[in-house]
Amino acid sequence: MLIAQITDLHIRPRGKPAYRVSETNALSERALDVVARLSPRPDLLVITGDLTDCGLPEEYALLRTMLDGLGISVLLVPGNHDRRETLTAGLTLDSRQVLDGGFVQFVADCGPMRLIGLDTLLPGKSAGALCPTRLAFLDKALSEADGKPVAIFMHHPPFDCGIRHMDAIRLLDGAEEFAAIVARHTNIERILCGHHHRPIVTRFAGTIAQIAPSVTHAVTLDLSEASPSTFHMEPPAYLLHSFREGAGFVTHTAFVERSPGPYPFVLDADYPGSH
Image (tube, rainbow, N blue to C red; front, side):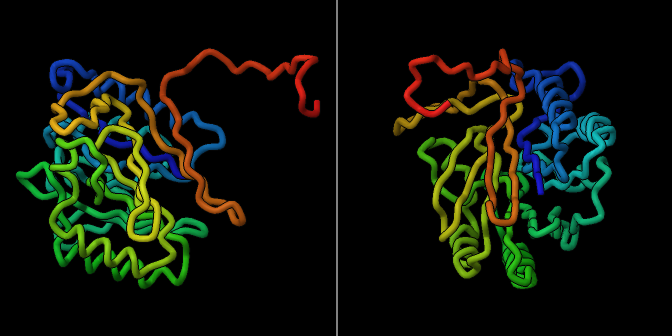
């Protein structure tokens, strides 16, 4: 089972960069093209929120054009830059997406794994939330997993990372209840998030929580007490999750941009290991 995860595309109306700097449409299209050409080909692509920058119909129309020609099944959850109604009206959604209660979520049994997508969007706010309805959805999906390994996908991370202005807008409402549910289910392999535009990993409620880097711009790595809200144009990247019987769940960080190579490892005659 091979799952590609991209996040924080921030698609804009044609000709408008995000924050007047980041050419998010071109960057996102390039990332999707790279994912589509991977070999072996991913079984699934999961997008963990902020599909668009402002949730406009034109933005979703542009993204739909990119996704409909991808040739890979796509599951997604919204981020704080999205609008649920415009998203569901503007995109072709997979049959495994669950729209009950107006939330955009999913449950997908893929080979040996169960994948759960949570909607953490709180309209009008940058921080995320999980209300009792969404927490009940998660608990039910976990209880019905029949012991399968589970990966949970969501936009807002449920933990502090030390970048102060991002910690202020992580998952806030419902975070303690979420942690309690996660702690009760020992078959959760990963909690996989977006939002922070940086690769970050921690232990959380007995499992591993991981934030994917963005395929567009990166939040500045600044762990000072008063870190300003800024971004850099670092090399865009995505996560590639592999699950194999016996090996378990293994995650690779892959860069979108091509680099020089590949070069063969030609060992020097003085190499002290075995040839």
